[in-house]
Length: 354
Image (cartoon, rainbow, N blue to C red; front, side, top):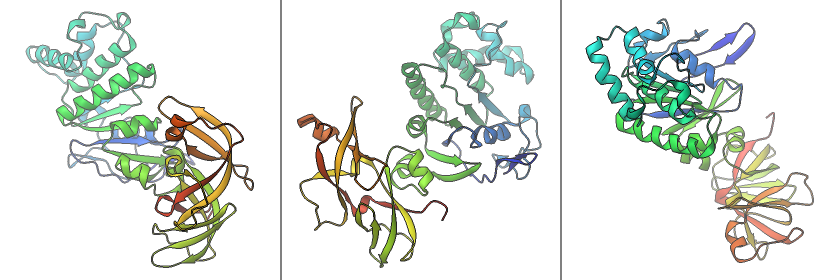
């Protein structure tokens, strides 16, 4: 699927198969094409090329009301002159559902989102979280084939956002409804999804389970966008069937993960903060990367304590997780350490522009 506006390409190529009952998030920075993709599925944008199928039925030529979708927006989009019941009932009325059937279905939908006691209230009498629950009931009451969520929690405070994240995920599993969720919040995507599609400049860079996305990023963009980590430029010195040697400005790295770069290739190695540990020596006997560093900054974040370590040959700091060590002794700025990253924890990507 492709979408362009004149000469501006919004979505370059999207090719996703989503299983029935699956929860898939489209994750990426602003302008990457995730909302445009969702709007094409919903029918509010027309693809420039490609097809959209929902339950083996081609829908890209159908208007939104014929696609059997439920939609939940960032803005609650409730009708201010209607009470909760009328808002939830609206989609059923537009579809010509008989009045005798509408009442019980509205009641069931409000029960699902724990809003049964608010049926007669106007939207202005509800909190933001309550309005979003009503919006969810309105999306579900038509019993859609697919539920589309466009950053529905971004306007809520953190505590309420986390509460609704759990509620929506539990409800989605209970109903078994196929769901596409758009967000720019990586923690939200990892928490809620069966799979996450990371988008960049209109393309899907990787689509996989959250654990794989974090532990085995397919591209340097995914590695940088998901979680934290450090990049170091290097050159491949040797490569065999079992390992590679890569020269970097902070030391020679031994890599045991499979990688395709040939000797002489420019690459970037990457590792997570929790995989960079402090050691007493250069740990030469253990494959990986060891280098000296000086503590530049320490950041206490409740459950975790992160450190930015300065290495002499680079302006870019190395990020290290010192949570466990800081429980015994809090390091001070200026302290010197040796850092070791095991060979199995180092990822290799092509250099920028390669």
